[in-house]
Amino acid sequence: MQNRTHNLGELRLSDVGKEVQLCGWLENVRRVSKNLAFLVLRDFYGTTQAVVDNENLMSEVDQINTESTVCIQGTVRERISKNPNMPTGDIEVVINSIEVLGRCQYSELPFQINFSKDADENTRLKYRYLDLRNPKVKEKIVLRSNVVRELRNAMTDQGFLEITTPILTSSSPEGARDYLVPSRNYPGKFYALPQAPQQFKQLLMASGFDRYFQIAPCFRDEDARADRSPGEFYQLDMEMAFASQDDVFAVVESVLPPVFEKFGNYKRASKAPFQRIKYEDAMRKYGSDKPDLRIDLTLTDVTEVVKDTDFEPFKSPSTQAIFVDNFKASRKEIDKLIEDVEVQTEKKVYWLKTDEQGNLVGGVSKFLQNKEDDLKKLGLKPNSFVGLCCGDKKTAQKTAGVMLKFLGNMCPEHMDKEKYEFCWIVDFPMYEIGEESGKLEFCHNPFSMPQGGLDTLLKAESSTEEALKVLAYQYDLVVNGVELSSGAVRNHDPNLMCKAFEIVGLGEEDVKAKFPAMYNAFCYGAPPHAGIAPGVDRMVMLLTGDESIREVIAFPMNKKAQDVLMNAPSEVDEKQLREVHIKLDIKED
Image (cartoon, rainbow, N blue to C red; front, top):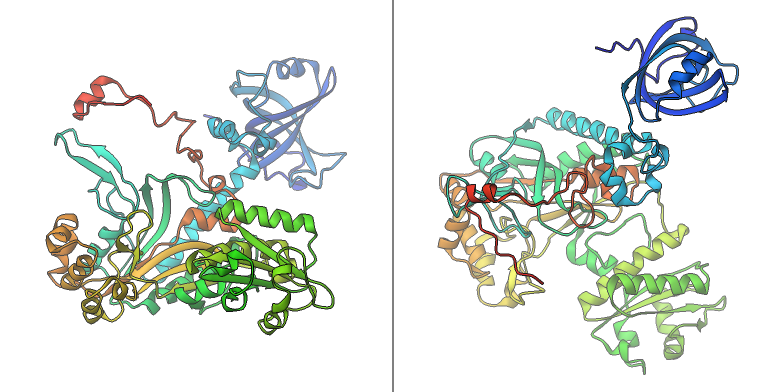
């Protein structure tokens, strides 16, 4: 067994003269002459310079490829040429002996370790064990560990009990595709990996546990995004019995800001209570249910002002404007803004400006020359930019919301960037018309408590119009324009639950069949309960400031949901398929 006397990040001037034994990866060799070379060794803790000053050792070093693991014995001495950028930069170790512990077989690596982030992402993921040797990559995984520890401690201090829930469970309709696991003992039947511990944590409340949490793995067969990892992710899952929406908010507002202030790139975070914004107000004011409150811009409805012009798009049901005063961007920057918004939204957008006298110029200004006074009444000032988005109300708002975020990022005077600005989005609609189905569907979590209870649901039965008016005790936690979590006060009354499902065409028998455990448990007297589940991966991504969530996951899949390191998904042999009663029927494209 190797016995390190020190790690590679701790030797200092006070250690000069000591005999030491160090182990690590051979990061670099700089040969000065036939009997003098400087080596840099790296381990988890840091780097240390070592010196070879005789020909015999030089011949040994010449046989060792970089990134081999080695053990050296030697004497610590003060460096003549110190390196203030290294914690160990005041000393070096004069090597007496060197032993190869694990030889790197290759003289050339897929990428330079300290510059691995410059490599192609698939190459980085294929050689992730090399990528993680880069201290800048490794430090984000260390940060993640520290954040998780902090969250665990904070939740325990709040009186929550950590309980793990099953990974192999039953399939249930929770909004995304399940990962299915065939059963060997029960032919034709399947387990499913949980999209979330939703039902289990509600069952724990029905079982008499008061406050539950876990750092929960969740599995969803969905496409990747910059802020969403395909396949699996982790969340700080929590649930509270005899709790209201305010109780959940109080816990989150106590736990998260200190974590963001301690570990984040920005040292300012919202204090409790976070701002609460109704869903309808968020869409009207920001064009998004994920507003970035660091940006001081808002939407203005100019439909009535522009609808009687000669410009056809302004005759749409809704036109939303963003007024940006003190605007300094060039025409080239405006063109880039318009292009970026249109690429992201797939909708045409328009613009104009005002000069120093407040006259309308550029873009679509020629169609609005007689509307100058009306626009000024709505807030238009000299030296301003106006972005305009048209369509039905929902489309115009969403498109304008995308433009608003782009404008915030390109106008520093309108964005207080270096802080974490939290808010709650509340009062979500219980139901919506599905974009694909065209039918009434649950808008958020189907297990949420409707505001107004049974009376509201009875009224909603009368028409789709009434159903769309129903609000739920559902809430999103948003920070800097990123949705960190969704949560809700749960519908713990089986009769009320069945009525909520009836409105989307599912009867009591359907509820019993799809959610038998929860339905039956609630029939034995369940407490009112509420919960939330902030995403851990997304949280760490916000703390580090990375644009890709894969940077904060030790072994992530790529954008196509492939694990190129382990070659998954992969084929299995016929024997394995027979054991789980699976026969492949793959149609060629």
